[in-house]
Length: 362
Image (cartoon, rainbow, N blue to C red; front, side, top):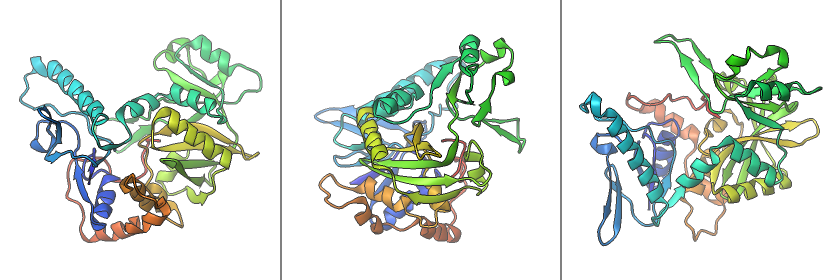
């Protein structure tokens, strides 16, 4: 069995997990996505049997494919300007072909591409969460000024506004950046109607929360972590990047766990990071799921780090395994041990995403 990670080998989660897997005796192959370079080429051969090759690795029955975060296709720089649009389209369709083809092979995908594309729709998330019995704030998705003003104008309503997906603005090479954040919004804050049509947004009833929860789903098991921000910020992500968020493992209420497992079964995902807000009455309000959200940073902040070993135990568990995640997690070194290794043997410098575990992504 080979663990095939669809991401750059130096991706901020792939690098430590690849090292830990190899320390435990597993073979790991990384494929960063389609490009003209040999290590990023791919082939699907239909002869007596189907054969899918990613880079230098030929997939075999029993392989585990972790669809971490493959990079967008990179065109051959020699493609003429007149042909770039054609080449982009061919690469895009070939990528979709590969990802859907994976689901037909005797390999284990985390997550299946069809489930990933389905659940990455915010409206689908909210509908499934409600259908599975979770508390979900009243929500409006819109670029209609009239609808936005009507939603925010209801008496006694406190509302928030957030983007569909994170975005970072940076001018040229300036060190200053602007990042999308969730914020409280009132009717008086709204700009002219035309401005509201510039980009759609998500508007929700605001949950007056005691603390946030980041939950990590692994199959039918969930692990919840209370996130407490001394500043009491509405959006904890930027403060987490500055080390201002306290992380603590907590028990998941039985009814919440049952609802999340039902949600996973209906959506088809087996792994993901979910966000909840917990109010003063102890009610857990579903906010969103990112099926490949950041999670290793929890071990950086938690006094009892454990999520890295749990994920690796989940990732490598054979179908016939009778052992729980907790029973298998000791097979793998910890993130702290990786940090010690990293100090002695730093990774080579390459054009890769930031090595920080905390990002603007949910």
